[in-house]
Image (cartoon, rainbow, N blue to C red; front, side):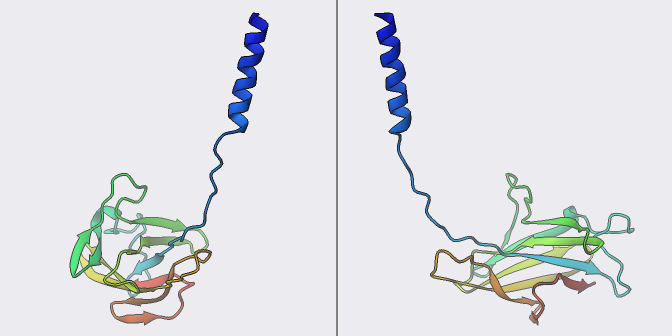
Length: 163
């Protein structure tokens, strides 16, 4: 009798495993809107390099999303980059850069803005034009960037900001 109960129990478990719900995984829009900034002086000294006296560390930089005319300070303690930016070393460049995760909430659906404030240096405004695609198979990123009102033409390269 115990053998029959064991066989029935195993059969029941196997039946449950093979008849479980099947959830289809759909496609969703991927938003990738980050930008690498290189911050230097007129002589090309990297202000993000910790070996440079007076360098900028992440505690001396604030990132705001500009939403409906309001500055919204970015700080999300649960993220790897709580300020929606981080300083990274790029080996291929041999230097440090500020990787900024840009505003994906916007003044309206096509353009979004961020403000980067530095301790001891003038602030920078970043404005992007988003690629809004109705095709869910395409990524949504940005197609145009303006830094302090000046359009940037080489988006595949880091943007150098002279302070």
